[in-house]
Length: 105
Length: 117
Image 1 (cartoon, each protein chain N blue to C red):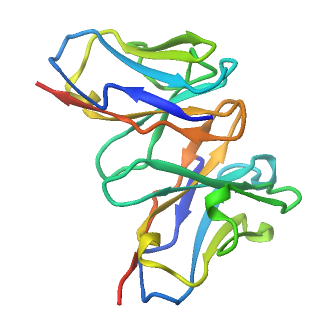
Image 2 (image 1 turned 60 degrees about the horizontal axis):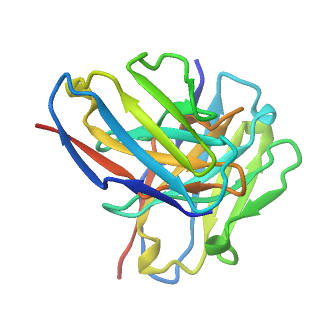
């Protein structure tokens, strides 16, 4: 399964509501997770099974979607959210998306 | 607390081999699978495969069949990645990651492998 993330680069201001998209080449059956990777760090699990928030992750992060289309939403952008975000499917094999780099204006 | 601690950076020449370790602590090693992820400089994440830490059976992604070997030292709660016949394109950071119910919940800090003549 191929995963296409859009946009590849997103520039937003602190306090903005931000939406990142991930589209699969086939039905993912909600087996989709989201990771945040800050520069020079290992990735961090944010969301699993489409909309389950990983322990310790702020509630401003949320996930939604079904079938082939999934979304990560940050309800109010914080400066520390500067990172690259990757979606990841584990329905059929394991695949990462190409990432969305989030910049703070 | 749960930790995955990986070995240090490596500088190798083309054709050489390298072995990277990932030592787990804070949980029962054999209860969770261990995955490996490659990240080339400035690039995204690429899933390499995983090893069943209970049986020792490895599974490799198509792009990582042949020169890549996952192994265990279960008594030491350690997973290893060995890459043989290194090529320039193997230059990357390699992460180990623990597989949980919905994703990779703990990651090693990553090991930078540089292949250069």
